[in-house]
Length: 174
Figure 1 (cartoon, rainbow, N blue to C red):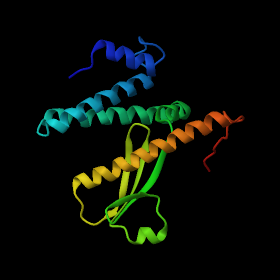
Figure 2 (figure 1 turned 90 degrees about the vertical axis):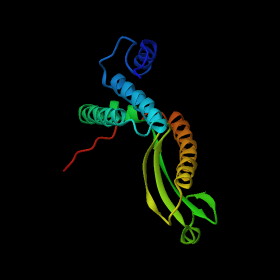
Figure 3 (figure 1 turned 180 degrees about the vertical axis):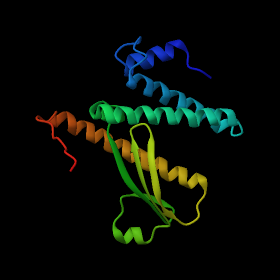
Figure 4 (figure 1 turned 135 degrees about the horizontal axis):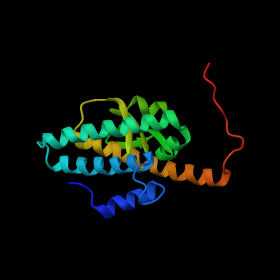
């Protein structure tokens, strides 16, 4: 279940400094992310593969440690890895999913969740609802993620129009 040499080279070329730059934090995080994605897909089909599940948990921990290291060492590189993120509120009223409803609509909802995500992955789901099926929950999260993707496209377009600000804002913790 390991990645092919060519796939690794492509990951390191895209996220590292070159295809031979296997040691950069960005390259390693990208490699871990790809392996996590592959193992997750495997586990969807093989739910009782506990050895793979254990390996997946370890890999997620390694990636988290590396992200924390990068966050503490160089916040700009950390932010570049994460890319833009967004969040939406999803409700369901009379079987219809809606994004960011008004208060009147919200009062009628039987599902109310907040979903945070990047362009390629959902990173947070929280909320409350009446009892619903797993399929309904997945549908609500997918619905939210599609809206978030559109918001991220808008964020990127706005960032291109605005450009980089100079001087950078600095933050001093008191």
